[in-house]
Amino acid sequence: MSSPVPTPPEPQRGSIPLDRADVRLRTDVGFAGALSSFFDKVRSGDLGMLPVAVGLVVISAVFTSLNPVFLLPNNLVNLLFDCATVGVISLGIVCVLIVGEIDLSVGSMSGFASAMVGTLWVNQGWPVGLAILAAIAVGAVVGYLYAILFNRLGMPSFVATLAGLLALLGLQLYVLGAAGSINLPFESALVKFGQILIMPAWLSHAAALLPGIVMVVSGIAVMRRRVAANLSAQSIGGLVVKAILLTALLEFAVYYLNRGRGVPWMFCLFLVLAVVLNYALTRTKWGRSMMAVGGNREAARRAGINVRRVYASAFVLCSMLASLGGILAASRLASASQQAGSGDVNLNAIAAAVIGGTSLFGGRGSAWSAVLGIIVIQAISSGLTLLNLSSSLRYMITGGVLAIAVIVDSLARRSRISHGRA
Image (cartoon, rainbow, N blue to C red):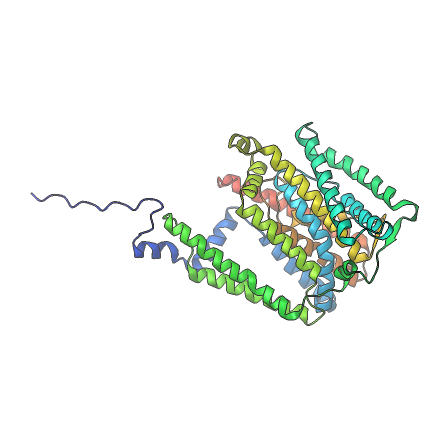
């Protein structure tokens, strides 16, 4: 009687020596597999930034058909200049929305920061760099006060930041005084940065190569870790195809903008801040804690996350970015006035984050949602301006787009719950 043939032991989780065919089956999903995975996510309610991307294409097509000037290079350059000011503020809104809260004072905070810079720099003779740091530091203090009111006293963020809106507006009026406005020197580096400074063409093309390179390098590192852990991973071919498509898109955009004035340095700063925030939200313990707190506060607390510290970091970062956005707005207008931060600045910053895909229910969001959202809002504003239509239409259209974004987010959330992915 022959003895049974022993079966070879299965590779342990985390062991590297795996059968080559097994590795090939797990990694050779290719572009078709990636496309199938994308459609699976969409069907399950994980829409990501697809709705806003489609909306941006539709808006561009409509306004271009009505006025071809809309897509001319120099008009797009001006659009990017305008995107950077409110876009930076919207990055902070993304942080507080992720943890399921809100900050209604970002517009007033930006206006007060611009008034501080104008007063300290022009009227008091401070160095411009020191005045900027002082304004951002005040923003951090304001955000920390909100955190104290929320964490220690249990005051809802809606009420705390609404009180802050009124207080900051009063401080802005007090700092500006009877004059009501302060003109910034046109020859200063700050004003040039907000109005005319453009990246060299060669540098903008070189910068457009970086995202694709980073995607390939980081993707290969992730793939190796997943293979080593005996998990499925995408193929190198599919990764390279996506990197090539991204690089081609960015290079074409840079080429087209360089046919006009070029890529603004101020928009480049906005993108750098978005990259840093995106890395912090997706690759750090702090970012995972933010998502966890926004998804389920009690579960995050029981998992050992310092929930109060997470809320404090969100409020502080939001107010600091609001201050920076106000400074950029002052450089764009070459003045600090009583109108700075008023009007639709507050609502546009919040709307940009939501339109871009950040959930109002907390736990889901991305820095790139602020980028796409503010481009949509500024595209609507620019298109209506070119058509010489009333600003009332801009408010109504922006409100409609915001409502659609919230409806899509709500329906997607229901779909994720039904698929067990909430």
